[in-house]
Amino acid sequence: MEMIQFVHNYNDESTDRGFQFEFYCDRCGTGYRTPFKPSVTGIATEVLDTASGLLGGLLGTVTEVGDRVHSAAWERAHDAAFAEAVERVKPHFRQCPRCTQWVCVERCWNQTRGLCKECAPDVAVEMSAMQAEAAIEGAREVAHAAKSEEVTAEAFDEVIRAVCPKCGAPVSGGKFCAECGAPLTAEKFCAECGKKIPVRAKFCPECGVRQV
Image (cartoon, rainbow, N blue to C red; front, side, top):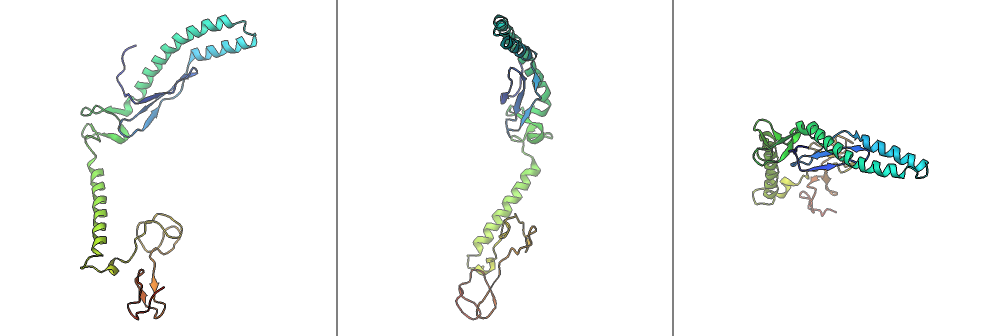
C-alpha cells in the first residue's frame, strides 16, 4: 500500500464487522466521519463462528484457519478502506502552506488568501470582534466616568440588564422583555413625597426622607 499524506488527527472506528474513520480539523476540531463500510471477512467469520457453535465445536479447526486468513484479509481490506476514506473526506480539508496544518474548508480556510484562518484571519470577522471589544471598552469608560467628578453617580444609575429579571430570557436593550413583556428598568419612588428617585438612593433628594 502506498503512503497516504493526510491529517494526523483522526480516529479509527473500525471493528471486525467493518470500517469507519473520523477525521478532525487541526484548528477547530470539527470532525468528519465516513460512512460505515461492512467487512466481507468479518461477515464470513461470524458465519463460521455460528456454525461451530451449532455443531458443538466440530468446526473448531476450520474457524482457527479462518481466523488466520481473516486477519490478513482484514488488514488488507482495512488499508484499502482507509485509503478510500481519505479520498472521500479530503475535499473537506486544506493543508496550509504556512503552518502545514490540515484545516476544514468550511470554517477554517481563507479561500481568498490561500491560507488557514490562523495564519490569515478573516478580516470581516476580526473587525466585528474589534468593534465588540471597542463597545465593551467604551462601556467600561462610561462606568468609570460615572464615579468621577465630571459625571454624577445618578447619571449612570440605570442598570443595564443582560437577561430579563422575570423570565431569564436574554435581552439586548429596550424597556421591556421581548419574551414576557416584563419591564427591564426598575423604578423607585419616594415613600414620603412620591417623587421618582434613583434606584440606589438612600435618601429622597426632594424631601430628604430616608428610603427603606
